[in-house]
Amino acid sequence: MGLTHKGVNYDVGTNYLPDGGLSRRVWRPDLMRQEIRAIREHLHANSVGVYGTDLDRLVQTATVALEEGLHVWLQPRLYDAGPQKTLDHLAQTAQAAGLLRNTYGAIDLNVGCELTIFSAGIIPGSSYQARTAKLASPPYWPLFPWFNRKLNRLLGRAAAVARSAFGGRITYGSGLWEQVDWTPFDVVGLDYYRMRYNRSRYVKNLRRFHRHGKPVVIVEFGCGGFDGAAEKGPSGHTIIDHSGPVPVIDGGWVRNERVQADQIAELIGVYDAENVHGAYVFEFIEPEHPHSADPRHDLDMAGYGIVKVIPDDGDGAYRWEPKAAFHEIARLYGGQA
Image (cartoon, rainbow, N blue to C red; front, side):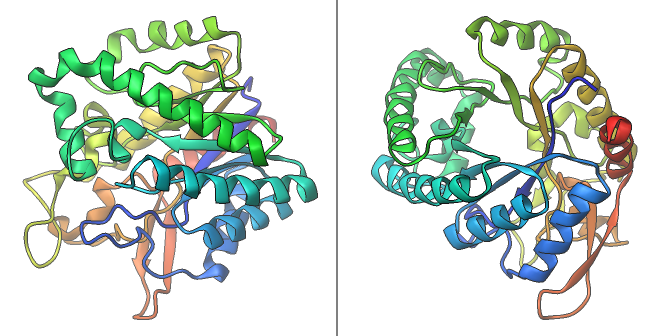
């Protein structure tokens, strides 16, 4: 396999839940350590993208991954924060990453993810959901050159903050709609999902990013595990209805793990053939999207995890089982293990 970094993403808890809570409400370092070890030993990955909001969890997880011999891309996420809070959060992460790099070496820093929607102050809107909705709103489309100028001003500041405390490589996880000035970065980082609207030109557009003369890393790719998930790409989670007392699957969606497995396997093949430096499946596990035998409550099918979570008890413990995508990734990543 031509990929230098064969990776998977690992969320330590990000503040995007409807109530503002972290996507991992309960933090169990013992489970995290088991999962990081599985990424190395069973998936045959050699790198992991560690992301989330809580700095202590970021450092704990990155340390375990480095001790397990994995390369790490560390990425802070702080949804709905303004520019200064976003940069302050990044500065703390960069300092921690610098200390880890001094000890272990094999760590790089990602300054953020799709900040036009996840950070306040670029696209109007009081929440990331409101800003995301404007991506599909024609009245806002003429404003995107201005939004991108604002984004690149913020990214220039973010790169400077990162370099002030961190001596390794830096990148950014850019959305498909963002036009990033890659000058301040060492690596071109793409959240590069394939879906219905971009399928026919997916590879052609990918090749264009090599013009920057820098390594290209696919920071995120994948889809959910139901019929139709490949066409939805990163919006597969929208089949969950959060309006009632408990979230449920909205409509008659049918679980199909092969859809996720085939999409991921095909894209790994594309990246391998197109001289991509590294690729990171989104994502390993989502404890807040547990599996259920009842299709209405099977939140796992709408998530992006490559393992399904089965809760064990009330203290946050759970067990997980590999899905079809897990086995495909292990087969492909293990080809040169």
